[in-house]
Amino acid sequence: MIPTTEQAFNILRKYNKESSHIHHAKAVEAAMRHFAKLFNEDENLWGVVGILHDIDWELTQNEPEKHCHIAPELLSAENIDENIIHAVQSHGFGICCDVEPVNIMEKTLFTIDELTGLIITAGLVRPSKSLSDLELKSVKKKWKDKAFARGVNREIIKIGAERMNMPLDDVINETIKALRPVEKEIGM
Image 1 (cartoon, rainbow, N blue to C red):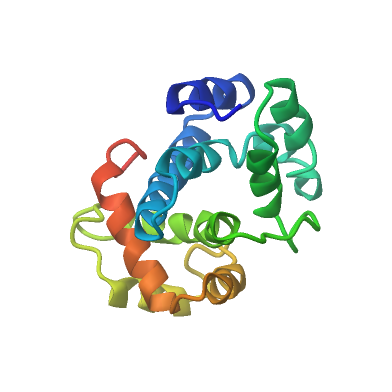
Image 2 (tube, rainbow, N blue to C red):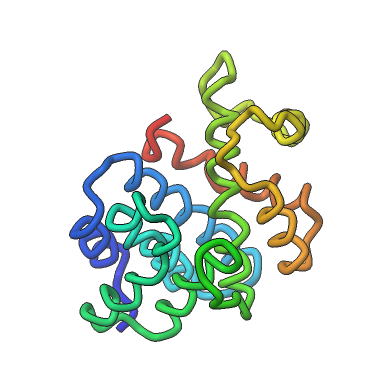
């Protein structure tokens, strides 16, 4: 089954209660929908993958090496389509699992999962506390500062952009554009 947006959030909320995790899911959903549109792909499918990608996070956050390993069981119990399950697992490639992102949807998720965090954090430290005036050059400046958003794995983003066959600057720019319309929904 490919769930609707509402169904996907209901499934996510069964296992994730913290608002920060729901906000992250909304951010990744928005970015995935944006890139689906750019690539002429199924926006609902990509959005649902964005919503469900961290379904097992609250169950594994104290043992991050187990992240993406419990997700298949949780999603299978909900009769979720195997393509979604594979995509969810693949976003942890090289970090906590060996399921490789193979299609453009999976490669995009792999890339923007980390990138959304960097962009949101960059927006929050601006005087406006907004993404409306956030520019690529500001994100690139923060990118170089290893102490800024130190939990964001920049190497994953760089590798992901290469896998997407897109210049890193374009991926960053498009992700900023994707997040602007939902900044209030993602806790900004």
